[in-house]
Length: 490
Image (cartoon, rainbow, N blue to C red; front, side, top):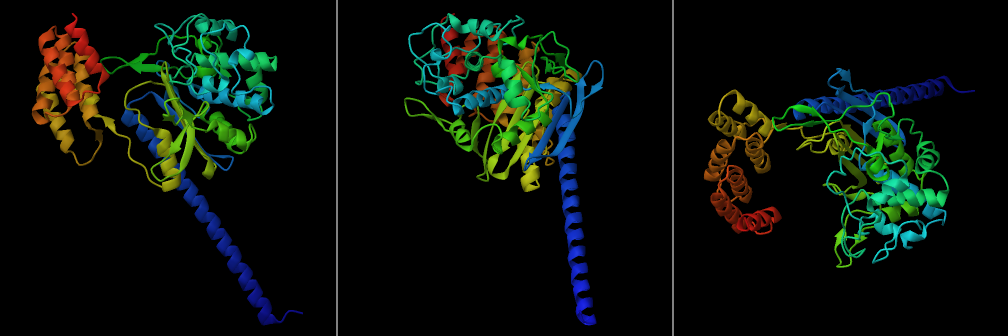
């Protein structure tokens, strides 16, 4: 029998522990909600300040989706709001998915990474040099990238083999392993190898071995004629910084390297299954994240279908970016934190910065830098409303503005001058770049801008003089060197 005072003490201790548990649970709930509020706040600020149609994003932790958000319009013309289940083109994130598919076959000893790729793709013609599957994955194979018109190709390829024919008759650009040239078209060969080794289509292989196991219910190869519900439309900005529809394109030329569509939720599921080793083994992931060593001893921080690195606080991450034909994206994975972040937008534009990194900062560090508005866009608006002098007055005001609302580094300042060139206002572009040089006469890009403005205005003499001045300030700028040679030969 428990004595009364002991019984009361026991009850008191239980009550204390239960109250503490409730308090801790309430604190965790409040903290999680505050994080989600901060993520939503950033998402909306980003869409507004960057003046983009829409952005969708998400964060997952320990195998669970922590947050999904969306802001803006998936379809401007029809006023369709973006939602968390809106489907976007993910561009080169497709390469990461194809890489995992290849590495599954490596695990099964059906593929050797360092074997001649033609062993698994016998219909591909023999070239001057052999290249391996590893070299296809890390972009050192010598297979060429796009030619004119192929990036936004509208041709429909009926099969992976048809897409491979795009490069089948071309010579290798260099001896494999001696250089690195990023190429989406080389990934078509990887898709062909998957088909040849597995005995099923590339699409069927992905469905059975990646999409279904990872419960990715909204990820597809994008066939141009096919109706996909909840799909966003892609946009660009024209020379006057107004929205326009991105060019029509058929993704069948690049399914494996840039032709998939998905949602943030599906990409987070892919990331979590990857780092929980449900798709590949730990040793396989280590192989994927091994540095690419070029024969001249250069090291490239791109492994097999994934880039990787450490952030400013020394935390390891890996993932892939994507940007093509009206869409931009990034998948960012922190394996030691079991954390992943992703964003997708339906525009390709300058100065989009890196929302996925901001999601990570909010989650891990409880802080982030406010997304900056475009100073160049603001100045162009003032220019068309008033004059070049008004734009310059505003420029000086915004540079002194302590609120730090606008991005105003040197590169951003240069962009306004190029906007004037792009809209055929050459004399005002010359006037503007001269003003910049009067304030800072040792920055080569100001002289390059002035030279470009003179060249467009038909004054090759002054263009050449300013290109040479830019060269004296920065002799490593290839564009400057090319323009000097071009003008000298005209």
